[in-house]
Length: 257
Image (cartoon, rainbow, N blue to C red; front, side):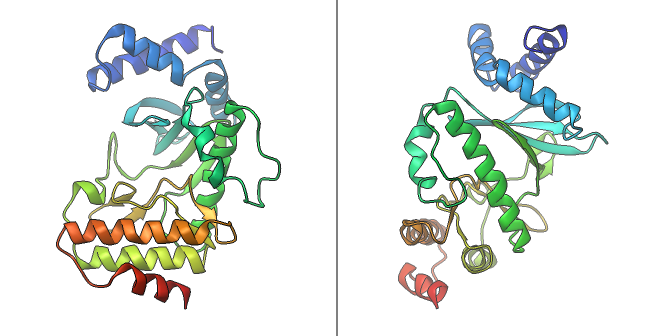
């Protein structure tokens, strides 16, 4: 598919959308970035998702980071889905082995960077499944293939819902945050390990925790350390917004009781 007319059309369509959306500036930079995201393996993965009817079409990027880009896609019925594509060229994944080592779900650790990215994608999918099954509000995981994760779209396409970092927060948001951490730990047996104001969507009706790739089982050797970091991060965030109810130590004690 990489050299096919269909692949070329997809690249050009996405290039046009991203340029119009001002995610990319110079034509040479545009093409370099698009080639990093949609290498041959990733294009084949997109094709596989489409052939399995897990994905209908792929539109433009809605969020971009060092390790992944999130695209607005549609399923077979034309309903919106979020398509997260991890960059196989990202070098930071080898630094994240600590979140995988000690996880009994994955056995032998991968040796190559590409295999690490594939495992990370699978890990996020499984974490979303576990959280969702336990009643924790996260985007519904729909499918994955290699470095691509298909999820429920949170927002009104092509715009994602704002995060805590982008909105006003109140005491209800505070209570929801620490209740969610507790439920994730006791019901899903997971610790998010990267909980921040940038990883919670706030819609008009609900709050949705996302970016679950770093999450570890509570049996992970560093789970308690990660939980403490998550609690401290969010206590610090709410304090900056003028909301102070409990200190980190008392919240951690409640979660351990």
